[in-house]
Length: 96
Image (tube, rainbow, N blue to C red; front, side, top):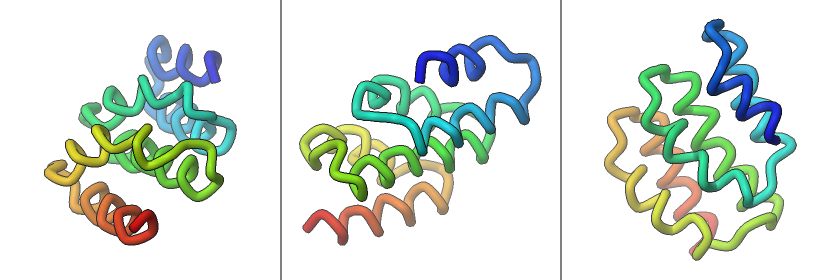
């Protein structure tokens, strides 16, 4: 997880950054939640999409609870990306 975040922060290659966040979706545990707001605020839609995907995967895999992600989901409800907003809506239905 730390290596993926390092690549995201330090790489000058956008594809590497996107790939690092995508890989985090698969290998992350809830310690990654502190980084998700940064992914959602990034200007690149791919990073935003994989960022919300991390939350989706953590919830689906029972690696975090609704309370762990409530603040992130609340902010993401009004995200500029329709994809992110739609994923939040899907997750909200899943956790009700």
